[in-house]
Length: 296
Image (cartoon, rainbow, N blue to C red; front, side):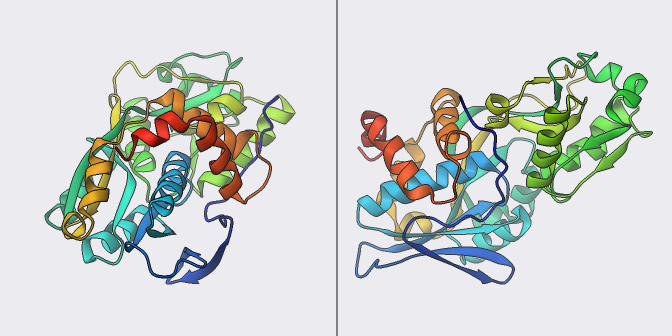
């Protein structure tokens, strides 16, 4: 049975040392030595699909002779760093909606290498036995959920869309919109589930929480959360010239929700630790044909 666990962003990898630089957690590979090149992947705090994809590509690229650092940061710092060339890429840009503002701001200094998943969706989720099924019912039943909607990081695209579109669009101004962090939201979700209490949270697909908790998405008849999005790889402007082999691999990279959920389950559900190296290695061994196809 899958164990539910709440993770905090910025967890250490096997054989890595963690250090704090400018407020972001940097995971630095140990024993890299001379190799085919050194690159840094920016990983958004709390965005587990990006953590999973980044851990996967770190393992794949290091097997190919590259040295890879994962640097955890909030999206604003990540995009600023990529635009300046301090980081090489991120695997977690949601378009056309969630991260559109960042692409508009920094687009001249970024390169979109394409979408590797086209099944992403922003959601408002509740426990599956909650007495409502649609966002149109939430305002009238706010008391059922303690008059609270639990969000994630204040600077995230999901919070921005919720504040600017969902709350006014569905008349939810009377509810307290709590913003803190993804781990805090997941802790709230865990506590409510354990207590059998109704809860409403901002969430997104793909996310391992849908396998770990009994949840349902509230219908969004006005489409205020947007349609399905693509999860894109975005690099610095000079990345393709410096790492043409990797750029080509990432342009061809595809991973559907079924595969992504299996990796997330292995890392965040079935596994009860924070040393992802062996977990990812086992997942790779179990999915070797797929992983081999990433670098053909």
